[in-house]
Length: 343
Image (cartoon, rainbow, N blue to C red; front, side):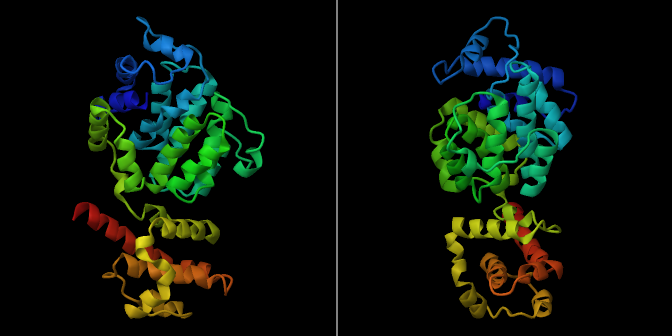
């Protein structure tokens, strides 16, 4: 029923005084679309709600509340609005406090990921206001069992994202956990999309499963929603101006490198030499180098070189952050993203 939330949010336009209307549109869209797909695995209470002549919320704290709320995280213009929208579209069915909590936590995580928050910032916000995240997926996997409640799936889904290094990796971790896998992966995948973007081949394959009506809703949503997903380097450029320990940046850069073999970054030394890019331990020369005309590979190569240098000289990466080199290179990647989007 995520498509119904998409349709309701799309129909509201940009008028911010819409909560009563949005609630009505959510019910209307969920019933209209739900009735057309009666055999797609609805829970018993939701099935009765979809086909009811007078649909009323049924005090549920099931994880469907979080699984279906992702459009809110992409539509919201602030974390506050994400919380308000999440409650509005959720209480029409899941009006239990735990159901609303699960929807809000998911929407907040998506909104923060989309707006450039680091994983550490997302973790801190969720742990402070919603759920403790004091566990690792590896540790709970042997004993984790099927559970349909928000409180036993939403924190696990968020943790799957936090431990990932790419969109595909996030989905694989979510599925590996077991339990209510489709729901956990839906929640994890939504946050991962906001943070990493979806690789083109995966997106094309997924969209191929949609029928004509659902594809039309998706196409309408793409026009309506903020177009953050086109930023190829977003997972890296979110570190501009802030560093929360070099380990997180290093992990994400390696993940980016693995996901984009076309840049051939294992050959960073040859790339630097071929492009006559100044490289060495003198960060001053690196900082002074003009990167305004560097292409993508030429920017990524010195970052890889700096990360590799960390293995031989503890603190090398942090030094390049402190003197502004990393931010300078990331800003060039940001410029490349903008040029790609706006020509």
